[in-house]
Image 1 (cartoon, rainbow, N blue to C red):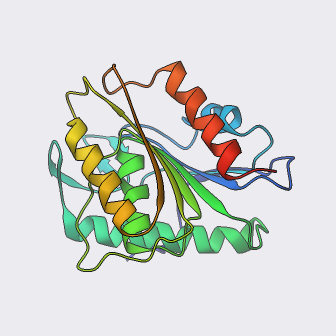
Image 2 (cartoon, one colour):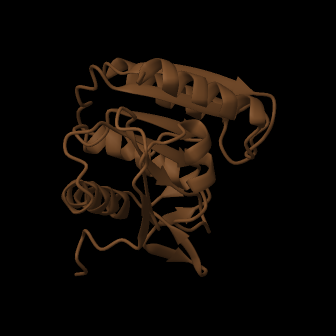
Image 3 (cartoon, rainbow, N blue to C red):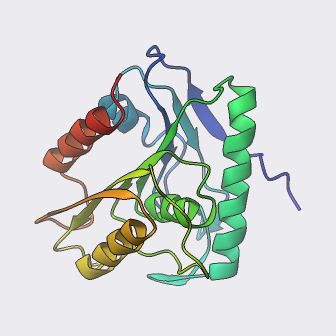
Length: 209
């Protein structure tokens, strides 16, 4: 079995010592480079930790396997979520992050594994920006997410993720105790500039300098 902490990744140290570390998690077919610009826009000066998914689907990188569109390989999801948690723990030491809060910024497949981190490994993240996320799995018991802050952005015309599924995820996280902000744009699976601006404002409000 490969070393669980061995993710190809990029780390940008950042210049703002008061900012949280942003864990950038790309969508299907992405790389560790994809969300660096978004991370820098969301919180200028924040350290950026951006791993590449280790699962390949027709040559495209993902963070976990799926059986069909919207149907996840749950045992693999559980395994890959644990691997990502181990990577984050190792990155704290390797990149001298100390006890700084880590906020995931995930898009699509990356948002789904970030949601899985919240549900299965609740001590990893202080917060998350979940862009086009759906319920990744239903854990046997909901974790205690008191104090965790989550921004969820869905698209009402998203053909890949029904809005009611994103709303279901929001309810699940709220039931677990998270502080959840849920908003929908009129668009589809792609992101719009207005919701990115809203995510940036939320991040500044919930994780002030």
